[in-house]
Image (tube, rainbow, N blue to C red; front, side):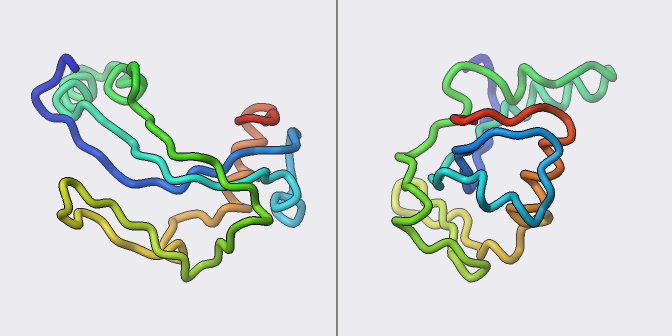
Length: 124
């Protein structure tokens, strides 16, 4: 869509079940409803052009259908741990494979930090 360089990246989606503001890391898990697998799409050519001009690059990341997501599995129905494997395949070819312990910020850190920027609400 309006790009000559569409890139993709597999992501863990964390669905919020209980909202909050300034959520401590120690309480973050209690705010999780469930998990899904998502695909983060980026129009790299638009992103590079915007960066070069010092402009925001929201349009490179936030476009229609830019964040497809699988079904959300409630927290109690799945086992998410640091050793959980996240894989992305395209037409049967493995493009990405990692474990959650390689995340830059773990899930509680992420929820806690995001909740300092804006109020999280159920469904986020």
